[in-house]
Image (cartoon, rainbow, N blue to C red; front, side):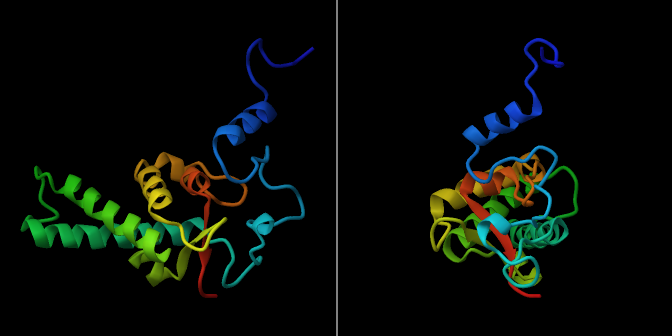
Length: 170
């Protein structure tokens, strides 16, 4: 007899269910299996260039990209970026989306990632490409998918686009 209430799925079942509709790595209940490191299953090194990027660096890169979008939107609209009551936030989101999606599709790197020594690597091809970059950026814009991370440090936006963010420098 199960110790869970009737109809309540166990963690293992939920993990398998999520893995069935969300492409990417398997979900490990409780984190990574013991004795492994983030990204090992993808063949990336434990540390240094090519290793999985940490959350802090990734957040800093998105912040740099956001401020760049804020600056560009302010230049083109002539609005004060720090004023209240303007529709600048929607324009900034659009500029950020374009910068991020196009840069990741074409180069696998955004300006913020370049500053912080990161890049987006595709798990199954040489380039991320436009469709997967659009999906990745749209999910990243929703914030929550980026915060829901697996044992390899990949958010749902990375899992859906079959990508991983790695370091380019030590």
